[in-house]
Amino acid sequence: MCSSSGTLGVVAGLDTPGKVDITDVKAEDVPKDGVRIETTQAQDVSITGNATQAQADYASGKAQYNMYSNNCKDAAVTAVTANTGISVPNADTPRPAPWFENLKENQDKVENPELPMDED
Figure (cartoon, helix red, strand yellow):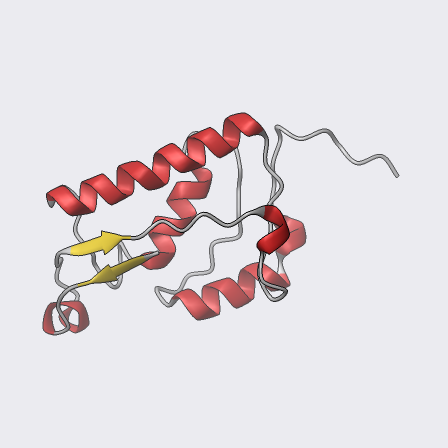
């Protein structure tokens, strides 16, 4: 979803220019090892708007990539959670792969109060 354009600054923990790429994935096309979060249409609109805003902020230089405090994982979590009411487990790691593994293992902890409650 995002990348930085410099390596020295990244390793040193300095803010550096970055970018956000957006890829549309249909529900039926989620990879088998992926995570699908059920959302409402209104949440889909918010998530799209959040991702588009992040893309614009990085392109304009308003937002800067930081490996430790504003990284790819942060961009993804913010896109899904800002103004949506959705809560996802957010492992304390800047690395996307371990965070994603944690999300897959804890998918049952994703909270979305906008969806009807399951009745057992």
